[in-house]
Each structure stands twice: as C-alpha cells, then as structure tokens.
Length: 101
Image (cartoon, rainbow, N blue to C red; front, top):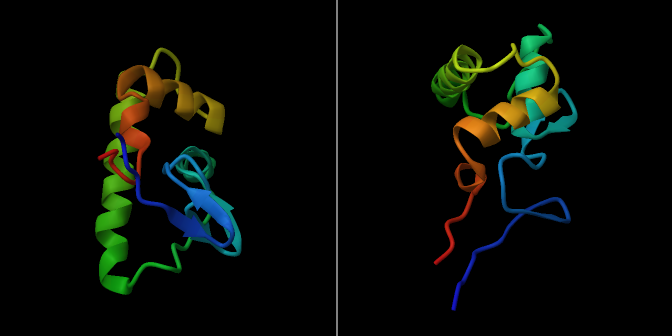
C-alpha cells in the first residue's frame, strides 16, 4: 500500500514542484513558470526564502536551467518548453515533493 504525505499551499494540495510552490512578488509560480520568467529576464525575489537560502536556491535553479538548455532540441522559452525538456531529460518522478512510501 502506497502512502503519501500532503503539502498544502493555501487551500490547494501540492505534490509536485511543477505546481505553484514558488512565491515571488505576489505571484505563485510552478517550476516551469519560474524558469520561463527567469528566461524572460523578469526581476524575481523569492521572498519566502531566508537571505542565507537565496544564493544556493538561485544557483540550483541556474544549474538546472543550464543543463536543460544544453541538451534541449530547441532553446526553451515558455513554461511549456521547459516542461517538455524536463520530462524528456529528467522525468516526471523528479517533480515530486514527497516520495511515495
């Protein structure tokens, strides 16, 4: 029997980072929307992170974006492009916030 733990943001149950788990300037973004916003040059502040967490988080996002872009068929721009590349290169299981027990 598989068991999962629930994570709730507001009233919505969140189980994957592709769902809106990132909060920046009053907007809720999923991972792919965040990638697209960064790619578009939007100025983002990850306000829920403590100051000492922001540098490592930005570095992690940059590494993921560079790796996805490096092996992409075409340069991802929109959230759908980033999602397509993630699913092709990394897979859907890597989106889970909570492991299935």
